[in-house]
Length: 384
Image (cartoon, rainbow, N blue to C red; front, side):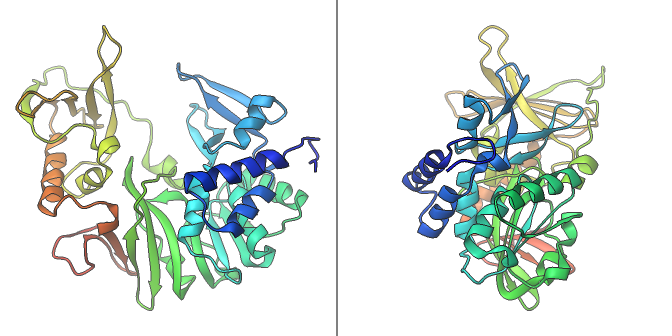
């Protein structure tokens, strides 16, 4: 079978489906059939790959490398902004199928996909559920138009709309499932209003950079409630949020700021090594606008310290190597201590017996949303 690109793709799609099954990402044969049947290269005809020097390279599926990438379990960046920052991407197929299976979708369910993007998730849903049961929204008109044309070329005609995903798509509600392939700092209540009671929404709740995970929320008459998934995942912020909440701000340290050095038992870089602690840090006094990174050793060019900076000029640098007594060096400058909130979050995590993601959950009502550990009625909860 060939597409309008004249490309033999079916063996690649079947290979991808087999790989996802072998890795354990795919267990439902109906989703495996969908992965093998959807030509991803038609929906993602071009992408950008970043080299080790940070430069972006444009690839198309007309090339062998571009075609191979289209059927690989990786994220494909599809849109860059004027600063060469990714704005949109084709989500990793392994993550998409895990999300679809987590939602426990039945053949008769109606599904709303927040974030049309390339249309690949929508195509998988259409193959399984049929056009009439699939709706999707995206804020970018060019993405929606391209996805609509490419989906139609494959014989899929779901209900697509160009609008802010915060509002969902009420004219086609109610839905049995909502899947969001963008992150939000709080769950929009409009999504709950458009879900049937007993339905589920799978949402990436992320109050700050790298801080959050997918949470599976069940719709009750008065609330959404559920736990985070065991495997960590993260999406780009919902498009309007990425512009409004993450502006490019110069970060400078006052010239007269005296570095304050001390040691800590809290391990460095929780944003990569302990994402539960990093989420909890957002509720223990960490200021907005934190940027995270690494400082390289000038001689070895290997990571030597984790770094944190904020727009007010505050910085923190935490050594990556512990002393013989298990302590790490911390150096901070500026008016705000950035590492103390992380230390408090780490103590909370230890106090609760080192909870993993599945012990954390969210309860969302029309008027408030809170994060909890172990039980919705836990004394230890934090408001989003």
